[in-house]
Image (cartoon, rainbow, N blue to C red; front, side, top):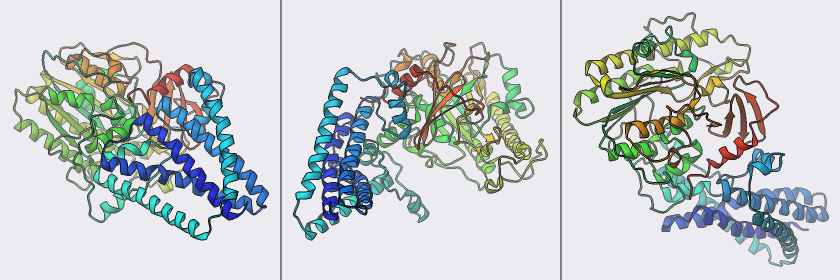
Amino acid sequence: MSLKNIFWFCFAELVLWCVLSVAYFFVSGFYPTALGMLFTALFIPGNGLMFAAGLFVLLVLLRCAGPRAAWWGALVLGTLFNLVLLLDIFVYSQYRFHLSISMLQLFFGPAGREIFVFPVSMYALTAAAILLIVAATRALAGLARKITWGRKAVICISVLSVLIFAGYNGLYAWGKFMASPAVLTQVTYLPWAQPFSMNRRLRKMGFEPKSNPYSAPKSGMLRYPLAPLNCLPKEKPNILLVLIDSWRADSFTPQIMPHLYDAYKNSPDAFYFANHLSGGNATEAGVFSLMYSIPYSYWDTVTATKTRPVLMDELDKQGYDLAVYASGRLDSPEFNQNVFSHIPGLRINSDGVEKWQRDEDAQQDFLEFLNGRNPPKPFFGFLFYDSAHGQNFPPNYRAPFTPYSDQMNYLLLTKNTDPTPYMNRYKNSVHYIDSLIGQLFAELKERGLDQNTIIIVSGDHGQEINDTRHNFWGHNSNFAKYQTRVPLLVWWPGMKGGEKAYRTSHYDIVPALLTHALNCSNPTRNYSSGYDLFSSVVRPWTLILSYTNKAVREGNIISVLNNYGGITNYDENFVPSDSPVSASALAESLKEFSRFYK
């Protein structure tokens, strides 16, 4: 097999992959606009070109061993590429996610038949398709040896391929910058798509990405909620959601948080959920799981289509004032394009150089909102403190925990580093936030708002400070309890409070609000992956996601599906386990990644 034969074989494979890739769009839906169809036309061959180029390089290397090695390499590697694509299409059609190494291990592992349930007809179709793919690969390899087109044809195809690849990436970069759903919605359709984005570079150059929502088509792949909400609130209580970035579960103590602790102990309507899990170990996943009550895996889709959480839609419909005051920017992560999209004049950022300054600014602006609001109209407030994320507090703050370190220099930290001074600095930052919350609660009481306001205080995720002695400092690195457990406190006027020991999660908060505050009669499954927060029913499993990984927690065992290779199992203390979560838990939890798609 000559180099020219290899080129034409890879090109023929690319054409085949383009034809097969259309199946993804029949599953997810074609975007019904001219821009959407243009991106589809560039996306399919543009994404396939990466794999065609990889196949070409591998075959050229085999060609060094002789033309016969290249021939057999084309048969084996071509068949393998085709079969993996076919398998990915099968899995995507049922679960709406793509294969990774960990997914292949699950599929072919001992529990695969319990987790991936396909009808018999699909297995028969797969068997027939495998035989067809083997024959097709053999035919393409034979065809490539017969093509007599010369150098000019190779150059033309190569130039066209470069133009398509550049057009695909350029259009995506433009669509990402302009927040165009016609482009962004489709990028998750094809396997392992990684188009270029220039938002960070353009932001550094002074160009700000578009944040105003585009109108999305009525038809699409997302079906959230599964049925329209039916809500008839008898009363409309105010709702205030207070989040503390990187709030560890063990930091809710009378020593670290005296104001919040006293407010809980002295309020008959206050609840403390002592065994609460975030839906993520990073801000995006944690806030997303709380506000949407579905897994973070839907982030790209709801962001592209500007789909708001059902809670925010219902609050808007019921005439609530929406008052959102975050210390950190709301366009990084892009909460302005999903959770808080469609809020006119959304406050994107707070003033201040240091995190503690921005925390104070956010709280002050919220208090000014309370001063200027129309009292008969209910409000939904969102306050997000950020100081604990950077272990930050004012330089003149009387810090109670000593000795404490300077800011973390992650390059100097090891698994043998004593965490005590860093933990003390973290505690001081939380103690400082508690002082702000104390002022907030005093202001609410002075205005009489404590009598008709549901207050929820929690964190987006936890914060590890070398607790497992594996050199983990921060979050988004594992799913042990230090990074995933957070406190949850709820003040609900008219309810009898107390401590709740059963396991809850961020997915449970929206069902509680919709059911008990807004009197929605829909089954929780219509819009949520969780349960009513006040129901003690046993949660059989919980999904916790990071930017790259997915974890299923059953009891205290955690199985991590790593997109970069393999499945790992450990308990909540990060101790390795020989036993994964049950096959039934994996099967049911994986369905949550596709349940809200059409």
